[in-house]
Structures are given as structure tokens and as C-alpha cells.
Amino acid sequence: EPEVTQTPSHQVTQMGQEVILRCVPISNHLYFYWYRQILGQKVEFLVSFYNNEISEKSEIFDDQFSVERPDGSNFTLKIRSTKLEDSAMYFCASRGQGAHTEAFFGQGTRLTVV
Amino acid sequence: TQLLEQSPQFLSIQEGENLTVYCNSSSVFSSLQWYRQEPGEGPVLLVTVVTGGEVKKLKRLTFQFGDARKDSSLHITAAQPGDTGLYLCAGDGSSNTGKLIFGQGTTLQVKP
Image (cartoon, rainbow over all chains, first blue to last red; front, top):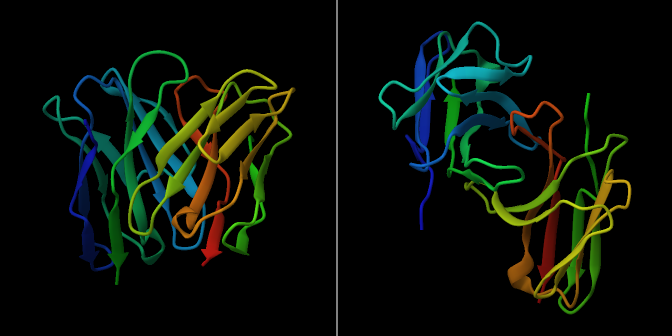
């Protein structure tokens, strides 16, 4: 069964450092997303990506965040200068074409900023 | 801003009991999804409801979409310990980018 894979599963970084979270979406999907879930809180939308560009971003997704699909298979989320409050689970998701299609989520990357 | 309010946030019941989880909004959603999330993993889709008034069944789970497409419910009959987990409702946002707006989740514990 196709799946979304994310690496690493856990990343510990020092405040102010750059991190790159990696995702391999399902191969024939066209829509890609990043969500985050701070411990004990709800899953929050960060950004959507379609046709090699950002289609929507939330107010959380400020200038410290960027996304890229560098080689047609990977989809990355970069945080330039991490803050303590960036500590969260980050989920990548992808969807195929068509209305109401299922969003498949990866297992997440737990980012801990110390 | 579209918001989904899920209730209750925590539910602890005995095996064999029935339960209902509610997901409410003041906004209309084109569809609503219910997910289950295990600790340390991503959400896994249980069902999508699209039409107002729609009812879908998945074994002992019954999902309903409100007539006005602003609310949904998940009913579990004769709960089992294997049903223990976090249940999330999520709605298709209004922006047509396919983003999902999540409720806060309901943590269900079913005791044997």
C-alpha cells in the first residue's frame, strides 16, 4: 500500500539552528501539505503546495519557514532559525486529484528545540 | 475563520458501552473527515462524509454529517479496548487548496 514517508522520525536541534524535515509523498499525488501538532494541541495547517508553488499558507508559516520540492519526489520543510516554540510533531500529507480525495499522512517528525 | 469544535475532549468508558463524539462548527464544510491517530503516528482516515444528512457505517462505528453540513458525529456501539485512541474530525477548508481544518480531538479510553 502506498504511503507517505518522513525523515527523520525525531530531530533535536539547538535554538537558532536550521532544520530540514523531509517527506516523500505518494508518487502520483499532486497536492502536498505540512501540518504541525504541538504537544496536547490540535493539528494545525502550515502550508499547501501544488504545481511547484505554495498555494496557501497559514499565519504560522512566516519568513522562517520555506518548502521545496527539489527533485520531483521529495518535499521538504525548512525552518531557518528554530525557536523553542517550534517544538512539535510535523506531519507531511499528500492528496491526489479530485474533490474529497483522501489525505494520506506520514508518521511525522518530532522536532525538539533546546 | 473556519473552526471545528470537538466534544468531549476526553472519554473513559467500560467495554461494551456506547459513545458519541461530536464535531461542530458555525461554518459549512464541503466534506468532513474522521481520523484516528495512534501515539507517535500520523492521522489515518476512517471515513469521509460529503452529503448533508449522510450516514456511513464502518463496522461498529457510525458517522453522520449534519443536514446543513456544519456538524458531524461519530457513534461507537459496544466499544472495545481496541477502540482506544485519539479521534479527530477535519473539514475541507473553503480555499479549494485541499487543506484540512482539524478539531481538537477526542481521546477515548475503553477499559476492559
